[in-house]
Image (cartoon, rainbow over all chains, first blue to last red; front, top):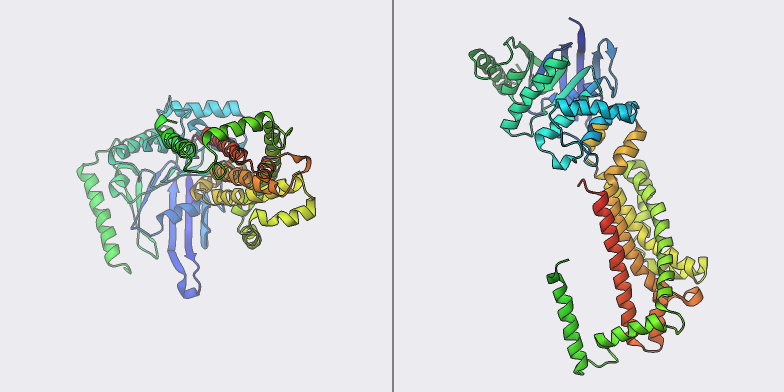
Length: 257
Length: 251
């Protein structure tokens, strides 16, 4: 399978006033995300799930180690890496359509072409009728759909998602999960997804990487070989969920093992 | 504006008229509303000093405020954006700003007259000082209060510094800048009248008009002048509020 994202020997240290105050976030992270794969990262709070995504996105510095995307070393922000934030991060002064277009605007795509492309996403994502609304007039689910459209329109080679459905109520959350799976099935993007929610991870992912508390490393990668569309309450799903939860509990109680 | 909000001022006017007409308040201290209205007519028709009519005073005063204010905008907004954006620039400029800011604009009058002579230029300078600081401080605050995640979202989309500056920073700070502009024009207009007390060339200006009325003890015209100044200030503020509502629909 063609490699997509390769993380090797990743370390992250936040320097403190003195060397003893340094905060070591990652011990050593090695991970591979294959092209077209949906990989989710779960882990306890503060273990650095978001930091990891931010390092891939170029928003945080890498202390040591390498991140390669399709063989190319990543260093800093790159249009090949897209990111969806938990807080949507839409530009409040732009209406819905110009918000989606931003990625193409930055690339210098002319206005007409941008608009046409953005309209495709509006139709595909069920946002018709809201093109001229400001973000403040949109519901949480809509805002996140706009945020996802904004990311996907730039056609990144990997899509990072940082707890994108964390701010939504559980009904909307379930709908958004199905929405995401639908577009993923059509587009076959490579997705690296971060969440607290083990149920969500089991429902969505091809594989789940479980992180330890700090200094963080990958405890285990679970392969979720369930047929799609998945049954949230199937025995197999429950089994995997139980194993992950036990692993997380164990690692919190015995952090050094 | 619902009619209920006009009730207190109207009641006040009626009470005032009653107290003046009955002699409880002597006319030389506080003329009645009716007398003030007459005074206003005099200002419009005859003028104070005679021949210098109200609308010309208004024209000159507005002109001075506009000049001082425009200069304040040109200076404070760019400086505010740079100071908000760059910690280095902020650290550099902040001590200077904080030392000058507490000096009341009116305290600059002697220096202004030395530099620019008596007349429109020194008045505009005083107004510039009055409007400058609120605009500057609000602009800085506007830039600094932009949610950092918005900048990160732009960076992740591979936006360059120019794009972030022009298409994220500036639009994001517009609400605060407009607030600063509204406060600035308010202070500028208030400072104007006092600035004109110090003297004006050509003998025109609302502050000058009031001073002349005081010289011959026409208190009805003094108050009429004050009412005009207040109403114009109110009008300017209302215009800016309208602009604010229109430009910041997204809030």
